[in-house]
Length: 260
Ligand code: NAD
Image 1 (tube, rainbow, N blue to C red):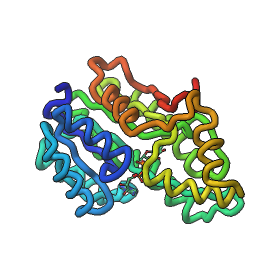
Image 2 (tube, helix red, strand yellow):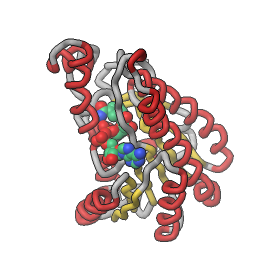
Image 3 (cartoon, rainbow, N blue to C red):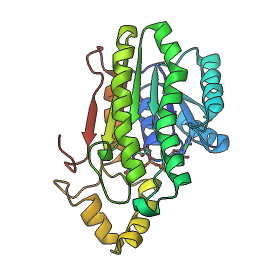
């Protein structure tokens, strides 16, 4: 159990990909923090995962775009478990509009959750990682960190931005044993994507099946969705890599939707 006893803070971990990563880390003995918007929902997830073991979970309420909430959440983790070894900055939303119709408030909200969230959670965890001389920070990018799709200007901009931020962190963190990397998944069937399919169909004037076949799976090599387990396996690799060599990287896991 390579993550045995490691404190792994995962944002947006009450649902979808974050929950899947938490499941994998708990199975490997990690002490996992379920950080999400609502405490009761996060607590329910933490209770379920703790029963699965062998690791254990705690819950914190945290809007990742709110500095006070992020700092309070990380302080609660450090008070209980002493440090943070792994940060998975995963919380995210999707909003689709063509640029000319994109409400500015929604643009700012999306960028705040993805980019301010990455910055604030990293900033709060770094002192603890620097103090112990080790840490792994993992950002949830997307194939949209590398490639664009219509209607997703805010999301594509945010996901590209994470690459730059991770590269800076990998340079600043190197002297302190802290690594920073980005996972870039293809389309994964989670609430985020299920909500997006009808919205894209309506805006593009095509059927939901066409959205799935052309936008989401058209460029894959085998017409398969990426799974939560695929993404969790990459998160585990980044979390537990045995040396400091693996840093400043982005790894696409998308059935070939994007190849670099
Ligand atoms: P999801 O909707 O299932 O889960 C997102 C979680 O983030 C939810 O639990 C939600 O409550 C939480 N969240 C939202 N705003 C938050 C905030 N301000 N503070 C804290 N938590 C917040 O979505 P998902 O598909 O699991 O997405 C997780 C991440 O993976 C996102 O960053 C998303 O962009 C990325 N991603 C998803 C896909 C996909 O196809 N599903 C592909 C590539 C990348």
